[in-house]
Image (cartoon, rainbow, N blue to C red; front, side, top):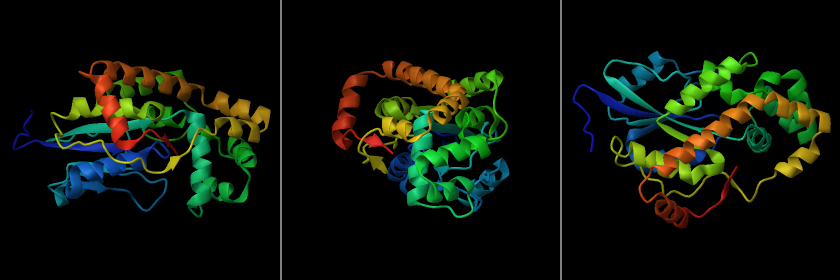
Length: 272
């Protein structure tokens, strides 16, 4: 087991991308680290936690070992006296957008354009207006976040290459549709640094089944086709991430047995 040197602090950072199973990950971290776990976000929905803000928070909370934030931005910080490990889950981009609509209908964020649209429109109209008026919110968002640390101009192939490099270096990588394999691999490789990392928590924010077919039929065919086109790089990134998760899982001793044990402990459900 690795021991933390007196002058070096190990910290696990959860890059909580919106609608990427983050609530369940937060529950896992809370039950793994207890009082040594924290959440850190600004009051601005689209804000960012700077490296300086992170370091200040850690100085004020010297026992904190894991932090979750919607507003951490890549690259992973490089700070003397600290070694940061990143935890990040990706999701099929079209399913992520579908889930975003459901979330805003249940938990509105007044003044946030996508939230206001979700509360006012049917899902088909919601997608049509986002595609036409707020394209950056539904176009290769995950590629942008990994490659550029921000959701801004539409990314290009060079951004996909950078995003893939960041993804493959992620300390604890996950993909929502292979959630439990991601957990088993992540725990195995980080357990020497974070021995209290536990996985057997009930999933939070779950849905009964995939609603992708219903979602597709609710959209105008041309709009849906454009949505798919706008997320081609994200889809490729997620395909590559899924392959990387499977590669890591294949390296875990007795991986299938560990997977069965985890699934028996928490039940197999579809994350919302």
